Length: 271
Ligand code: 13P
Ligand code: ZN
Image (cartoon, protein in one colour):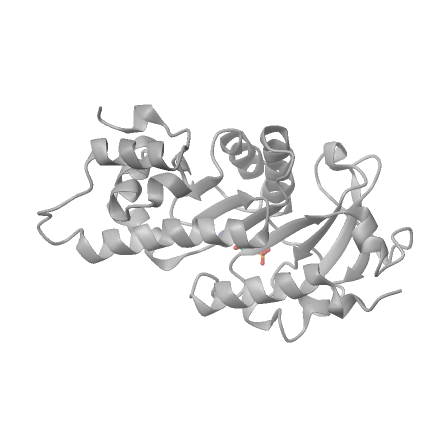
């Protein structure tokens, strides 16, 4: 059997967490990542029938029965993932009845997966129905996006439109806009269900005054999605207190969407 520390999915989780930390998105234990990996791929490194222990999922995860994920641990610092993946990450396999997850590797100090596990798994279920190639759900607390939450109306249409105005390629990167949830108690099944509901329509969901969720096919794609939203929020925060004398016009956004051949939310534009 191959060495798990050499597995691409472990290395990629380490470098992604390190990049998220480097950018200031994930202070202390802020943020969490879940990445679905093919069983066959995991089996190259681990005995997928041998559980170190079982961890209750806390909700009905049956639609993901038998699926394997690598997930960041609760209370763990993104700063430390790269130097000690075995403590800060875990590889799990959802049981047949969806009530427990078998821990195959990781959480070495007796830990468990993120407290946002319901939001992650429910979002995976929702995104897989829209795009069977979806593999990643990522949560973080990007600084400028969070700042923007305090000074911009938390209205999906207005928020998406403002972000699109901030960088030319925004409408091409997230043409469906961003979903926005009101402030809710984190770590609960309720916020998980609300996030999954939004994920039917959006790959980016803002948790008001808390952070953001992103979903995508790869770690890179999902990271890039959040990175683009955060960049737009940064431009907003750098300019919102200054007189605006130039802007990207809605008709120019239409031209961009047509150039990139993306299906954008026409009702989010004033055209
Ligand atoms: P965890 O440490 O449980 O992953 O929680 C971090 C977080 O960002 C909660 O929303
Ligand atoms: Zn959070």
